[in-house]
Image 1 (tube, one colour):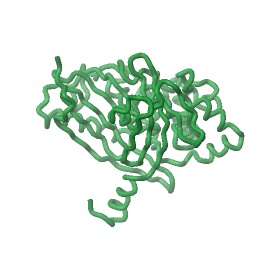
Image 2: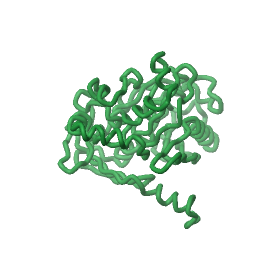
Image 3: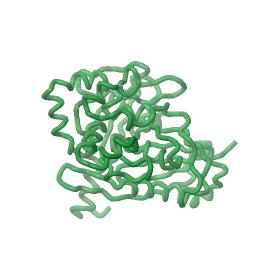
Length: 327
């Protein structure tokens, strides 16, 4: 039996890889920070290629520093910053613009328009979310409205839009797999929590063609294999990608909150409190979000979520921009 799992943690400020052994102990770890781009107040972007390269660098270093034989790696799992959107050309593999980060508020005017039209209750009923620029759907709409090449690629059937997990999976499989999981899909404003499918009505309301979105698969399952010839990680070719989940849902699972009523709070770029509600979707009376926790062993479990957007990011700002603290 193979000895190791390669865990990719693609976060908001860094890309990390952790190698776990069969006892769940960390064998090795590598982490690379990447740039934060602020084109104007309230806007946050990432270079999608820098995300990819930093993740691949961390993979190579974690394997090397741990003295890991790639033949002993059973599988790769991916967890990622949620809601951040990457749009790219399926033919060239190049992004059409910088990734629009979950913190970015540029689509706020469109969200206000949806609210004024009285559409937020419908959106919440279908998705468990709110009409807020936090979520992916309005970011995709912004790209279609403001990036001319995106419209051209859409007309040619070459536009792909997805959260960061789908961007990593597409690249690591050499473009063979364009997929996301239920937990990430549930953060887009385009995924119906009751039917567990992309919702045609929501796509029309947001002006997002569902054809640009990835296939939705269970959180634990088949996401393809690492392609041959990927520079820097050639030795990892053929290793299967067997899991994907949004970072907060992954943290809920990682903290063993697997029973209804179990809850966790994590402290990272933001702070996020999630509670497992079991196989029943709970509709909050206090503006908490309903979301998919994960899909595992043929069943889907749900969670309630409350979010504080700026926690570690505020500390990073004090360190890097105001130089008020040194570490």
